[in-house]
Image 1 (cartoon, rainbow over the protein chains, first blue to last red):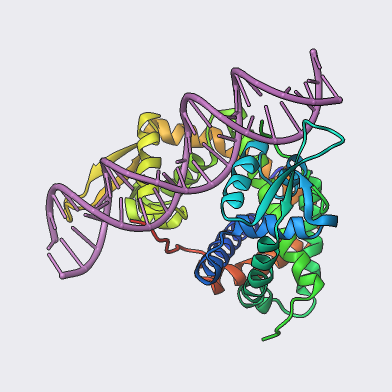
Image 2: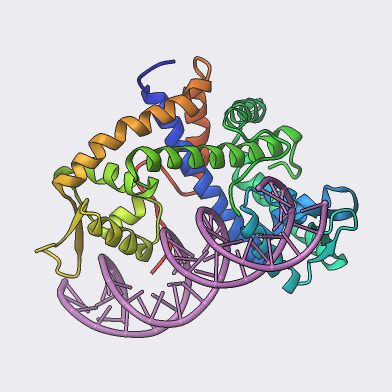
Length: 159
Length: 159
DNA sequence: TAAGATTGACCTATCAATCTTC
DNA sequence: GAAGATTGATAGGTCAATCTTA
């Protein structure tokens, strides 16, 4: 392992910070402007919609959306108020609680998804040259995995 | 401009989110564990140290560290409490206020920098193959710049 | 009237403690 | 006692309003 940071490496690290900040900011603004929905809501809707039955235990949901458990409790509170998800107890383990997509939640996702996809194309994918997307995905996935966030799920602190 | 998102593009975008989250988390934890300093303090110390005289107007500092003006006021409040920076009025424009590195701030940066650099090597640079750093810096800088965050400075909302 | 900085009100995240169930 | 979820206390951020100076 090298003991010094090359200029390219430092530039890459700084560019990662800037690119991330810029993208999150613009995508969130567009989603709020078009659909009055914060990115956090969108992430939860997408994550639930990818599961069978549109339901997930609170802990699992928190891990996939990179949030603490208590943070997820509060995020789901807000989404329940907005009518997008419901809560459901699980018969097998009565400690547990499910977050479940409501029909309104599915409808909201259906409307929000084109807005988000267009934003990702416009602000991110459009600036990649042929082959760069694959290369970028490869590199960043390797880094994420090496630091404990493989593709499928993730662990996150919180109580 | 394409109207659909390829799988590679979507994977790259998701990997960017995960890599960023993982890196920020581990680097912040290490800096706090070793130096009891949050990453935000570190960024301010580095930014000030790169200027002539170790001083910068509050607005300039906010722009470079990607924070709103009010956010920077509060961050500097905490750093003044910690003894790392001071405030100074500027004689030319008495509306303005400078944040200035104190000797203790310079000393804190001197101790924190090796910790941070080691973390960036260990968790980021170490996983890049030869040439990848340059490629990554190039790609991400292009995206950041296209979205309004060129290398030098940045604009940020806030009042 | 506008610009720089701060303050007030509020939002959303975390950590630690708590409640319920296993 | 341990695990899932929630709640209380608190940290740190934004926006809108305010104060001072240009």
